[in-house]
Length: 231
Image (tube, rainbow, N blue to C red; front, top):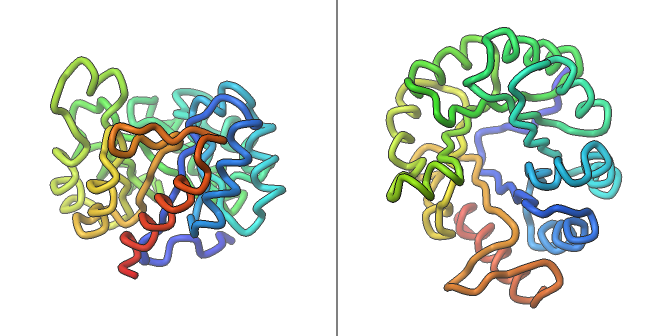
């Protein structure tokens, strides 16, 4: 049976887009103290540290759901199972994957009592894919504009598609990719109640890196959490 992690209230998720646990763990500690709800093992950390990062974060913060941003494109059950066994509450599967890759990730989620996020980045018809994912049992849809996509196609944003996706599905949404802190904080009012910020954070042209000005990082995250939650 799934733990109740999605209750309709806004959640703040910190994506640890770092390459090593040496950098990620101190950043996670600051974020947890600042009130972040969920911790994401971002793709760079998955590549750099793999299952060890998922397990280390889960062991250190057992009450904080851990998201494994696998961006799974194949072997949906196997990849999800590996992450669930090491403490992940969520895994991410791509909408561009084979239909049965998504279905197999969902099957693993049901068997282990965990959750699946479906990323619709680069799907030709994002609305149709969001609906299909909902029908297949995916728990959360990620409306995502990728790093390379927004770098080479200037001006693209997940907010371009958010309203249409929101009107198409009932399951929770995230909007991810190139959003400013102000834009991310507005996401709940736009229909995406699961809000993501990345670390390191760029604030007013100043990049908050691990170990660099931890007080400012704490203050920035705490203020963001308070904004998202209307405090």
